[in-house]
Length: 456
Ligand SMILES: Cc1cc2nc3c(=O)[nH]c(=O)nc-3n(C[C@H](O)[C@H](O)[C@H](O)COP(=O)(O)OP(=O)(O)OC[C@H]3O[C@@H](n4cnc5c(N)ncnc54)[C@H](O)[C@@H]3O)c2cc1C
Image 1: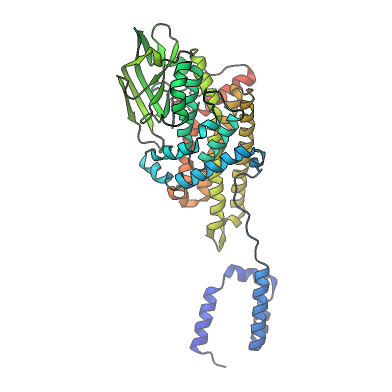
Image 2 (image 1 turned 135 degrees about the vertical axis):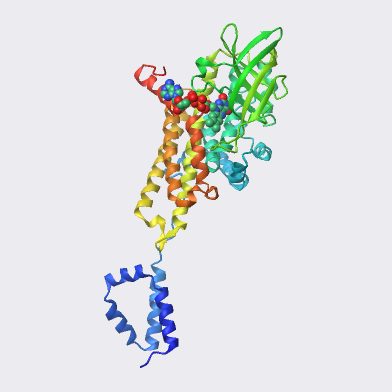
């Protein structure tokens, strides 16, 4: 029988649609020549029946729906109270609805989306953590951890904005402020009507700030005169409650002050060219004979000990940022591994990709469980410096590993902001260096476990 052009066309089409890899797999199971011979000898009716049967079989054998992607592999959520779960859901919804759609855009614009503050006010989150008088709710640290994790899971800049305002600035007032100062400022801070910042680091002194603070203060009558510079101060460009730490010219004592944008001699410039947390506005503050009334001095500050206390209490928050960031990077990677196909199948089907996902998930799970325990210790008033520092060291390092794998797993897309992991990759670098670099936090733990300080 001669082959027509139409038959040849059909054959060509068939050949193009054949997946060579699947054909090779089939040839390992059956004799292809025998199979083709058998099929070609069938009449049309039997062939149609057989095709229908095979389609049905193939349908029955379909792979089951893959399980949902989740970065909570050990079901941490099941250990939360109903209230904590509600808070988690609220923050997740807020982040996915209001922040996710704009995060990359504002990151690129190097600007904090101020309209988010009004949306955050509706959540009233700080009142789940602090009472009106500045004391803490019974599970404040766990709640703070959940909130921070959920924020950072979508965007670390948002978590940092929240941590600087509701952690560093608020704690400075709570620990160092007088009753009158708390009465005046606490309600406004808790309601996010006034935004806080925390000015400690200086251009020439970072890690060694406890020993080498250069910003000075001196009292003239009822006014304090401040001189110096502060670098890296988060929220400082728009905050109106800026805690400034300074060393007294005569005694060398550390003092804290509440400074506002309109204090004479105060100026701030937005820092640019950052490659991490670009949505956070970091300010470079200059104080030139800056005048601050005695009533704005934090009169209950006990020299450096108060600053150290503030940093100790907020450090767990940074560890939770690392947890959230790694969680977001893992979840995006697990999703991408299902969607992205190479060599005729999803890349999640390759052993080397699965290995990366498992490594990432192991990191995330270890970080979560460590931080939950840390926050429980903090709520029980049993958390020591070295507990917080160990969590910061461990989570920042594991987060770095995790986001690097996420970037890698996304191939070229991993360096595009569109897929979010590039943002996580960069933001992790800030987590690694702020609130005590990983080296400094290692030294804190090292001192505790050996009894020997190795800072200098
Ligand atoms: C995005 C971002 C936001 C920030 N926000 C704020 C803020 O709101 N308020 C604020 O006050 N500060 C803020 N900081 C500053 C931050 O706390 C400092 O960057 C940090 O303390 C490190 O100081 P440094 O950058 O001057 O580094 P340096 O202290 O100069 O350290 C440089 C390197 O030397 C290492 N090193 C230093 N001493 C030792 C030692 N004894 N042994 C071993 N290694 C050592 C460090 O670990 C680091 O690797 C922010 C920083 C960043 C990046």
